[in-house]
Length: 337
Image (cartoon, rainbow, N blue to C red; front, side, top):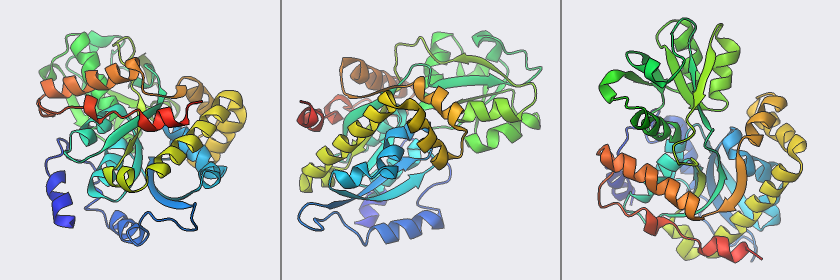
């Protein structure tokens, strides 16, 4: 089984930075988690291996875990805390996770993996989610100014897909800029040392640069491209076939967390800040810039298909990849009144 999973993964279009399979930390985590397959623990409680990150884009998952919303829904969550969406997609594809939260770009690659993976709902979306921050003296104030510059971005992420759309809209070719594949945690140091002229990311990364790099400044968000850059829940086919009730319970818990985000934003931001280490006021500002709602409507579908079509044009996704068929509203409809 392991060889089969790894064989599928070798066809994943992006080389993942900090690969999970290569990292000893992940291997230990996977070995531990595989000891706990999804099973009924007491007739009602189900164990579920959930991959997500400790940043604002995963606010519903963080709150549901911190306030025991998953437990209340009958789930015993085995968390797999990862740094990026591509890592979450990799965990799902290789069988290390049963469900994973991620941005639009990793989701379409996961859906195109050939495995029976389903995108069951978007939980957050914002066309202003991704931002460009420039170094002092870079001369970057609008899109054309990026030509000839060194721009840091993490490949394979939702931000990467958004930036490609941004470049296409503004007539910026690959040869016009030097894209540097860089972890967001390394972007401030790279800008301070003069290795990059600009960086692109979603919070907290742009804010980190602005706070730590003297003279750095915001240029623009990647808005106005007809894409909402949704963050979505992606579920393994094995979980869906064996325990569909666990998927419904997962969405119910997340919906409860989303209600809190929308109704008690200050309290929600304080909870998230304790987990992420980012000041609560910064988390509140970022949180309020995102539209939190469980949905898989026409706008979300269109956004995901636009992202998939872009990567098909870039030859990073097979033309035959049917992302639309990977979107499944069944579980979302089950929790609606």
